[in-house]
Amino acid sequence: EPEVTQTPSHQVTQMGQEVILRCVPISNHLYFYWYRQILGQKVEFLVSFYNNEISEKSEIFDDQFSVERPDGSNFTLKIRSTKLEDSAMYFCASSLYGQGGNSPLHFGNGTRLTVT
Amino acid sequence: EDQVTQSPEALRLQEGESSSLNCSYTVSGLRGLFWYRQDPGKGPEFLFTLYSAGEEKEKERLKATLTKKESFLHITAPKPEDSATYLCAVQAENYGQNFVFGPGTRLSVLP
Image 1 (cartoon, each protein chain N blue to C red):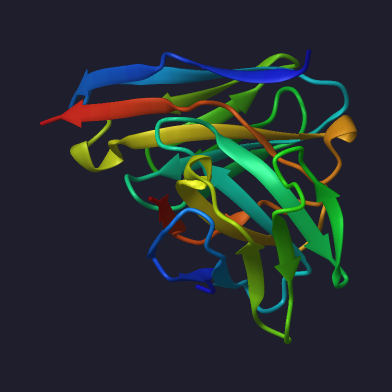
Image 2 (cartoon, rainbow over the protein chains, first blue to last red):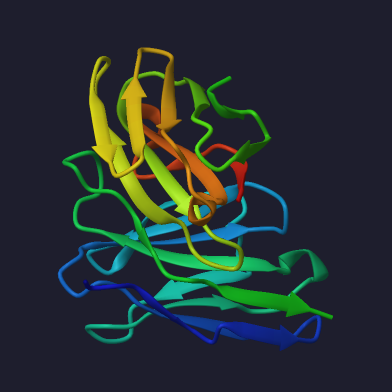
């Protein structure tokens, strides 16, 4: 069964450094997402991406964050200057359609980001 | 304020002891309610989609139902391997493409 893959599985970085989290969504999916989950808390929406542009973003997704689909398969999340509070599990997800249409999100296994 | 809540926060069952998990939502224009299973350190794994009140879906020992205000995930004769956190998420008209997740129910099934 096709799956979403994420790399690295764990990233440790110092405060103020830039990090890039990478994802390969399911190949025929059209919508791509980043969610995050701080330890012990809810899964929170960051951003959705369709047709090579951001379609929606949350308040969390400020100017420190950016997303890119540099080629036909990869989808990346960049955090320009990490803060301690950015420490979380970051999940990439993809779906075939954006709304309804029997189109659930399919998640990767996440990247655990630790900012020291 | 629109929100998604789940109860109980945690549930411990003996193997074979059936029970139900609840997901309550207060959103306008529900497009879909989704159940996921999440194992520690892993991403949520899709289980079911429900779209309209009265709908039911089944998979092995799990059955999901939907009313206008809540969804239940019924677990029949659970096994230890059913231990996980169960998340519900909703997609609604005023959320656009965003899926809003509940806090989850942490299920432990003891042998």
